Image (tube, rainbow, N blue to C red):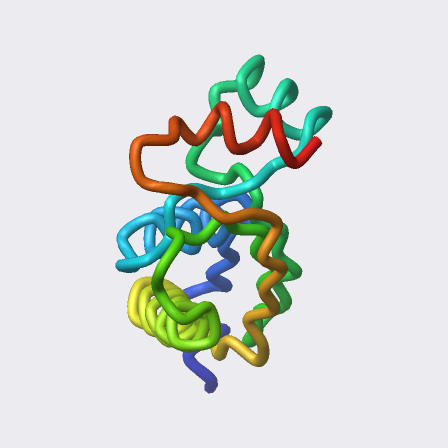
Length: 126
């Protein structure tokens, strides 16, 4: 018999993976905030899912693909921040879920300057 028959199937919801990815992204040095856009930002505020702002995922039985929209801090090389971000998100999701992360795609949607509030930066981008 296989383990599946003896123990059952484990399924991890997309929201769980999105939350893990969002928290890992926000812990990455050089990331100022996640960017959710106008409609997504409103929906997340209403539903209380702020940790998933700027994150979309596709989760299968064994693999996951993650898309992130971020705002980086000014003065730090974007490519370095993005590589670190991809590594941090991949490691967090794989360690916590056991899923194989096949890709972490990033879209840098803004730059936050020192002293700027992230909300002000988002207003300028829109």
